[in-house]
Length: 192
Image (tube, rainbow, N blue to C red; front, side, top):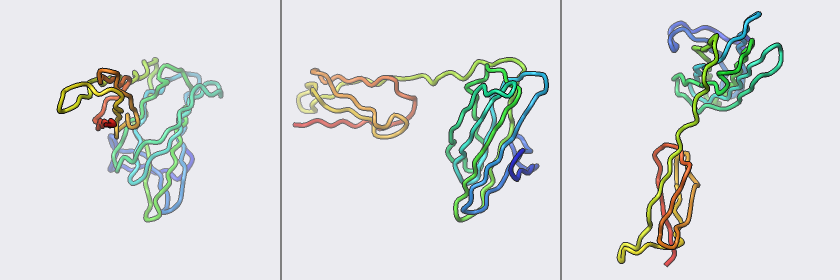
């Protein structure tokens, strides 16, 4: 381990878990290394935690000192809860796993950040599947005549699909494909 890690025995997923602190207005990093001498393993997932900030992380898998995979991302603030990060590389054999977290505390206060439940297996796992994509289609019509409106712009205003747009065809029909499952607002605009 590198960083100022400590075990917290009264909390976890399940308890205990390991955490490190960043003082208010400062940034601290901590790294956990998991190694196996003479045997390969497969990294399936880890649960990450932060009290008040997002969680930038880097997860690296190595075998015989060579990098097999490296994943870097940022989880949104978990507000004191744990969030599972599934490995997209669960079928890749490794002998060393490095998990590095970067804790950038707000100016107001100290922030604990940590991890729990590192899931390793002795056999490969199928990586998580890509989320199912959806499509949205319909027709934009004139409320008075019921006729389709050609050239209207249909756009998604919020959610993970925000900014996606299309124009209606000559009959007022539209279709948006490859949308992520979520709630979102669809707006339409047309000129007179």
